[in-house]
Image (cartoon, rainbow, N blue to C red; front, side, top):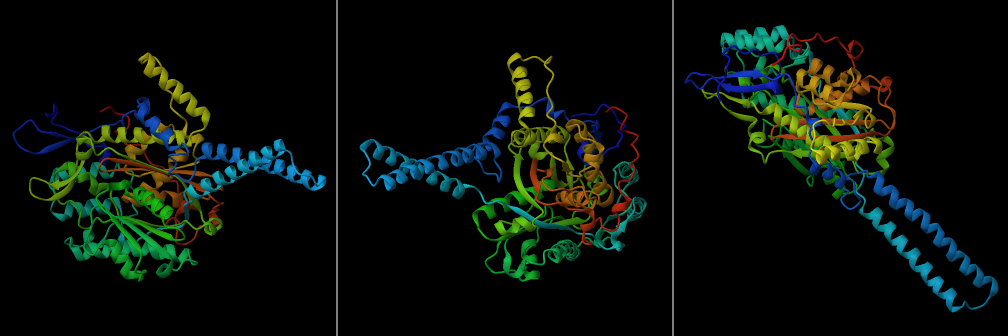
Length: 553
C-alpha cells in the first residue's frame, strides 16, 4: 500500500485512524483520518435479521424477557385453564346434586376435562421451570481518583514534551489530537505515568489496579449494606484487557476482601473496550445456572504498563484519550431483591467478527521498529467497526423495536433484496422508540458524532457519552457505567425506562445490553459515591466544534 500524500492531517481520534506506508523504502508509517463512520444502517444482511428473530422465539429464548412468546403462551393457559376448571366443577356439582351415576357421555367429557386440565397445568409448570431466572442489578459504583491524579490537557502536553521520549513531530501530533479529542481538564492519570521520570513498573501497575478496583468495590459495598461480601458473593468476574498479572486480578480481590472459598472467579483479558458487557453477559448465564446468589462484576483498564513512549503514530492515539477509571456492578438472581434493585437485565447481544482477518488484526498489540510495545490501529478499523455495529443492532432490533418499526424495516429490506434496486430508499428504524436512554462507549468524539448521525439521536441522548468523555476520558470498558451514573445524577431515570448500553472493542467485537429501570432514581437520591456528585451541576458543558468536522477526508 502506498500513500499519495506526504502531508497528512491528524484531526480525529483513535477509531478514525488509517495506517499507510510511506513511498520510500523505510518501514515508517503515516496516519490518514477518515471523517465518516460507514453507513451501516443502509446495508444489512438478512441472516442477522433472522438471528434477531430466532433469539426472540420461545424455543431459543436465552434472554430474560420474551414478550411475544410469553404473552401468547400465558394468555392461552390462563384462558383455557379457568374454562376447563369451570367445566369440571359443573360436572361434579351435577353428580352431587342428582346423586346419580354419570352416563357414558358424561364420563367421557369428565375424562377429557381432567386430562386437558392436567395437561395445561403440566405445560404451565414446564414454562415456569424452563424460564431463565431474572437478573437484577442491585447497584453499581464508579471509581473516582483523588484530585492529585487530575491532569489538564495543557499539563498533559507539557509532560509529553518534557518526557524526552517523543520526537518533535510526535509532540505536535499529541497537541492536534488532544485539542480535538473532546477531553476536558479534569481527567486522571496513574502515578507511574506522571512521575518524573515515569515509573512504569509492575509495582506501580499493581498499585493502580488495586486503587481502581478496591475503590470502586468499596463504594459499591458502602451502598449495598444488606450484602455481606465475605458470605454472599458467589461469582466474581473481572475484565482488564492489557494487564493480567499472576496472581490474577480476581485473586487480588478475593484476597483483599476475604471472599468465600467456593466462589466462582473469572478473569477476562485482551477483550478490548467491549469487555464490560461480555462480563455482564457471562454473569447473566452463570446466575441463571446457579440459583440464590450474587455476582460481582469489575471492569477496568490499566494504563501504567501500557503507556506508549515511542513515535509510531498508529500507536500514539491511545495516549491522547485513554485515562484512569473502573467500575463495580452487583447483580442478583434472587426474586426478593427485585424490589430494591435499580434495573433488570432484559437482553444481551454479542457480536464477534474475529473469524475475519481484517477484523482480527485491526487493533493489534505489537512492538514498533524500535521494540517499544504499543497498540497499533489498522486502516480497515472504521470499516470493521461499522460492520460490527451494523450486525449487532440488526440482531438486536427484532428484540426491542416496536412492531410498526420492525414491519417498515422488513418491508423495505425485502424490497431492496428482491428488486435489487438502489432506488428503494432504506428505512432506518427509530431506536428512540425502543429506548429512553443511550450509553454509547465514549471511545472518541468523532465516533460519537457519527453514531449519533446514523442512529438519528438528539444531543440530549448523546449527552451522557459526550460528558463522560469530557470529564473522565476514555476509561475503556467502564465508560458505560460512568455514563449511566451521569444519567442517574441528572435525575432522568424513571421506572420502566429502558437503557441501551453499546460498546465495541478489539477482536473485533460489538456488544449490547438492555436494562429496564425497576424504580425511579431521583437526582436528590444521588449518593456521594456517584462520581458526578460534586460536579453534575456544571454539566453539560459546551463543546466547541473541531476544525476538521467540516472538512472532507
